[in-house]
Each structure stands twice: as C-alpha cells, then as structure tokens.
Length: 398
Ligand code: ADP
Image 1: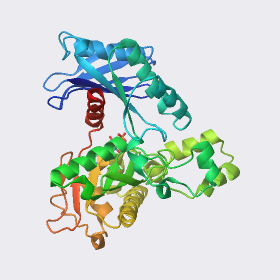
Image 2 (image 1 turned 180 degrees about the vertical axis):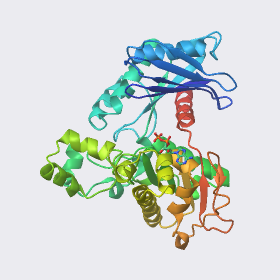
Image 3 (image 1 turned 90 degrees about the horizontal axis):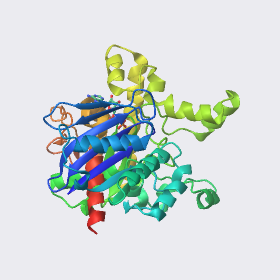
Image 4 (image 1 turned 120 degrees about the vertical axis):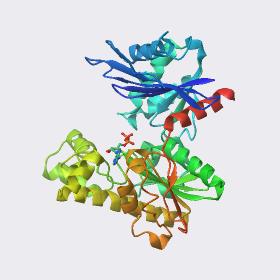
C-alpha cells in the first residue's frame, strides 16, 4: 500500500511516496518556486541520479500534477500508474481545538480548516491550496490531514491557558496550541521502542531543535506542556524567532520606535533569535563557525539558545514530577553534539549525564548518556513523513 505524503508551503511543496508494507520510501521530492519564475521539481530515488524537471508551474495544481507525472514517469518514476497510490496524507499546521488526532478529509473538515486560517494565516492557506489541488487531480483517492497541533491537545487547561482575561480564550480562542506535534509524537514513540519500555510508563522531554525549535513534556505518552504557544513564536530562541519575552517589550517597540504591526511581526519572527543576537546568520553551522573564530556575539547567541533549552528541560522535569528520558531531534538536535552537551551541562543534579564520546554522533539513533546516567539521553532522527503516512494508513484502514 503506497501513501503519498504532501507538505505544502506557500511557494514550495515537499513530498514522499512511502510503501507502507515495508515502511520504505520509494521516492521523495521537492518542488520550489511555484508560481514564480524558475519553477523546479527535484525527485530522489534511492540508488538513482536526481530527476530534475524545470518547467513553468503557475500554481499548486500544476505542481501536484507534475509530482504525479514524475512518480509515474516511465524512466524516472517508481509507479506504473497513479492507481498505485492508495491514499494521500497532508500535513496541516493548525487544527485548532477541534482535532486532537488526524482525520480523513471531508467537507466538514475543509470548512474547519478555513476557520483555522485566522489562527495560522501564514501556514494554513498554502496547506489548504495543496489539498484542494490534490482533490481535483485525484478525486477518488482517500486523503487525510495530519495536524502539527493535534498531539498537544492533551495538555491540561493549566498548561495551555495564558493568564489573560478568560473571555479572550472563550471568544477568540487565544491559548497555547503548540506545534511540531507530529515530530514530538514520533520521536517519543520511537525512543520507547528503542529502550523497550511502554510509553505509558515514561516521563520524556523531547527537544526538536531546528530552524524552529520546541520542547515538549510527554508524561505517560501524552503531551502535557510544550514550548511553542498560540503561534510558533513562543518558547526557546530560534533561528530568527525571539521566543519568550516580556510582552511589554512588544508594546514598547511599537510606541517608542513607531513600529507597525507588520514591522513588529517581522522583527519578532524574521530578525530575532540567534540571527538577531549574532548578526551573523540564522543557520547554526554558520554561527558555530563564527563563534569558533572568536565572534563574541555568535558565542552569545549559542549561549542564549542553549541556556533556554536547558531551562525548559528543567522546568518540564518539574512539571512531570520526574524525568526518565531526554530526546534530541531535528537539524540541530540530530547533528550538533556541542549544543546537545551544552544544553545538558549542569543538569547532573537531575540525573542527566552526557557521555562525550557516545555523543559524537550525527543523524542516527544513539544513546548519548553515560552508562549509569539516571536519565537516558537519546538522539532520535525525526520522521514526520513516516508518521503522517502511518496515521493516514490507519485512518484509511478504518
Ligand atoms: P527546519 O526547522 O527548517 O525543518 P531543520 O530541522 O532542518 O530545520 O534544522 C535546520 C538547522 O539545523 C540549521 O540551523 C542548521 O544549521 C542546523 N544543522 C544542520 N546540520 C548541523 C550540524 N552538523 N551542526 C550544527 N547545526 C546543524
């Protein structure tokens, strides 16, 4: 049974075709510059050269049409016909409060996705466009949506409510939603499998550290708190996002510096984080290189990032009343031993002890804590696409 996983952005689209009988990726690809001059599709199949199509794509429908053509291409494809795609799983960023798990797409779901646009004005619209385009091209193929927010719907009110007037929650849905849920769910389940324990017995902190970063406290398999909030801006400092700050800073900037709403959003989302502090880059590799070469602001940016991750790990251990496992994942979490070690430094009192030699790994499943560390620390590469495919398969089978 082959599942096509689609992750649609405003001008790009990532896809993977996964054979679920073997949980094997048959093909994966990226379409860039949709609707812009220079549209390009790049498809990769294990053991073959890259297949590149440069062709005008006016919109997402054109892009998805080309994806399907690439998958069934006689020479470069992996399928004989489109009928071999049993179902499609779409990644959608915001599922609001209604969906605490993935769902099959129907008219009611589509209507609700539209309602969620106001909560995720940058992310949900391209997701919806991608679904509509796919529906038009594959009208008889079942489709599911998998939400970034769904896994966090188990958070108790005491975690997700902001201390604002309660009416703002009731009337305007202002609360913490949390993101990266598919990733946190996947790596927590995986680590339980790796250590041979039941998820329901474990207290886990998952650290998804990439361009955007979030941490989640997972107690007995359920998200009970997470660092991103109403939007992906809350939490640790990120590539270009500020993360937590005193909300009065925002009104101060608007009043004193005369920033408009748009400029303020741009400042907090695009110009802050480790980029804003270092002035070098939002990419951790660039910042680390600069730091090694003695750039003090790059060093400071890394220190701030790592300090905040550490504070969240500590606070989530407190929230769960203990800690069994810490997981690092995503670009930085999987590939950056220095950051992993620095985030855990000083947490020995919680039972976290990193083994420097074992920690020298990149991009693969590995235990990186010392043999006798009370808390086990793991690197678990995330696989959101596989998680989306699994959820889709389960829904289709039902
Ligand atoms: P996104 O949030 O866009 O999905 P990723 O999870 O791909 O991001 O993470 C991207 C980040 O991972 C970048 O900042 C990149 O510098 C960082 N990264 C990738 N490889 C390494 C590495 N070897 N050392 C340090 N950082 C790395």
